[in-house]
Image (cartoon, rainbow, N blue to C red; front, side, top):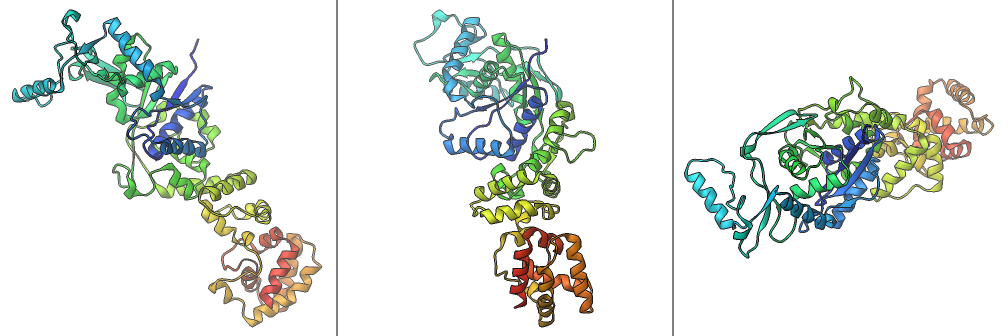
Length: 467
């Protein structure tokens, strides 16, 4: 019987959700969701000096915005510390760990002696590893895991391939400190085991940790999960992603107005591929995503490609869903909410403004004619088209519009008739109409604007401009 796939995302709440962390969460989410499995969330909050509730909340907010839902409640690693300590003591009972009473000074002296012998790095060999418990002093101690002293540790990684690590380069790592607190290496393994995690998909900066963590699994007789260490994300210049490349936190992308579906699509494509497919839905990504499609080389962030993908998602979005996300963007960025009238016009007019908008600010800019109220104030370029002759033509147009059937076909006949009567082409009439209806020179189709804002509003705006 095949066991259920369980993945997890385990961020440290010391800052905003980084774009690299978001992609790691996305890969875990896609892998689990595409196989009917569980996607779990664990907050690794054991570093109490750097932990902040605000950072933990920012992680949840970022995941929620991206649409990455997790199963059950988020687990706090800090709250599991008693369980971690219990496992360390169970390792003592099993004989796979031991009490070490070596002081920091003794460890430093050991390393100094090895360096004097010419060793570039010396694995600390504790004298307490095989000591008789009867010789234990009444002094503070740490619990160290017994690492194998010879042979190799093999990591069968689904992305990096077969990784071989010599055991003589691995020390007897501390699993429980002298103050009784667990180390990160122990806590991660215990939590993953207790949460039933079957696949550990994370950044390749954790690859070296896998060897030590695999030893903990073996020491406890637990099954080892499937490892998949994914390459990091670099900036466009091929260097490690940093603030100098632009936004690095997921929240910044939300505030810049990128749609969540576009971000999911782009992040999924960042280091993973499915043939030549660039644009796809989340449902398609869930069906297609597998670990074999992840490359070994670091992915490069490409902002132009991100904008292109986001533009395609805005164009393809359901209007009601797009309007809902647009309002969420306004709220998140501290902008005024749409009025009832604006929301009504947007719901009717999104079809004619969403085709070439790559972000929500661009969408709002293209929807300017839907959001403004009378009197429409033309910008400098548009105002030039409202000369006395053009205003006279608009005055002649108004009575025809009052009795018109409000359809595109009927409006085309009227506008072409009026233009012909004044000896001009339609393009000459369109310019003052754009100025009257939107106050801009670049707008959606004149017909689309007239149909969306309606007969009364169209006539009123034309009258204002003609006056």
